[in-house]
Length: 195
Image (cartoon, rainbow, N blue to C red; front, top):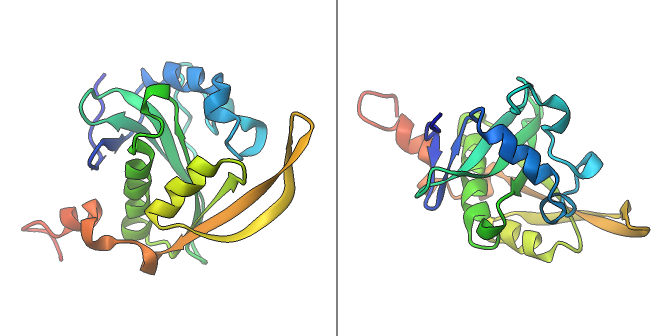
């Protein structure tokens, strides 16, 4: 089954997951290089307990996307917005680049920008937050390049291999996002649609 290009960036696009993505998601769950640096509970993909027979998460009140390479149309990771708070207009972002050959090559930044576009210009949130281990310097630099700001640190928040690690809390406000390249706004602004 082919991915439908939902939100298209420079290197990748976000797509609704297809059944074939399920096997990749399961493999990424088993890759400690991908999942151990992640800060979410259990150190596994958030989809793990929600897998259906085909491997894709059941419908949950979150926005899950497969990250797909623009040239090969192959899923290389996933990203999501979760805990969307309609009153305070906040959400949390999580991302995994599961395919090792795509890490550190700008695919994560591209996917994050697309996901932020969805958050700010489609879901109308005011603030997007994320947590990252203090030792994960590469991820912190990636988030900073996209525009996230460090707003705090949770000391000794997770224990891995008998060592306590701090978690850095980062966020971005809608006013700090570069809306000039918004895929959502470009789509809405096309002829015949409201500006």
